[in-house]
Amino acid sequence: MKKILFVCLGNICRSPMAEALFRQRITETGQKDQFQVDSAGTSDWEEGNPPHPQTRLTLQNHNVSTANLISRPVTTDDFYKFDVIIGMDHKNVQDLEELRPKDSTAKIYLFMSVSPIHSNADVPDPWYTHKFEAAYQQIAAGIDEWVTFLTAHNE
Ligand code: 4NP
Image (cartoon, rainbow, N blue to C red; front, side, top):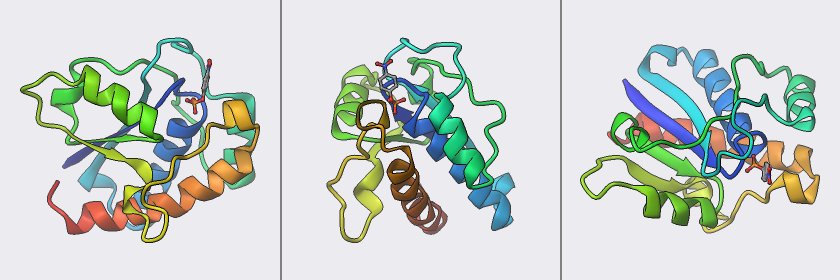
């Protein structure tokens, strides 16, 4: 069982989209039992809140379930509990590196690092850009790369 945590700033836009899409994809491919997936924020600003209304609308438009998505901050335990922690932009990754206890074993990645053509890109924050559909499309493409990568590599 591989344990995967997606992380953004508020945990109401990008990382819940990634969590929901990853869960849907592994269900479709029959790999549900091989993964545990969750998401969190580097801040606690939205703690306890459901995804942003536009995040919910965008996921619903694409028939992706928004069930059980409640914002929570990253905890110290996460760095021991999860095998792979994926930040949606460079700032998320930098914050995760700073939060990570020195003896923790989780591997930290940039979400777009698995992209064959845009491996150093951020997922722009729709909280600021208001481009929820663009974020969805970028994340949906990336999720397929992640399922392939995590299936092939023993992370
Ligand atoms: P997210 O977007 O990191 O993709 O969830 C944000 C959500 C909320 C805030 C910032 C970014 N905020 O400032 O509350």
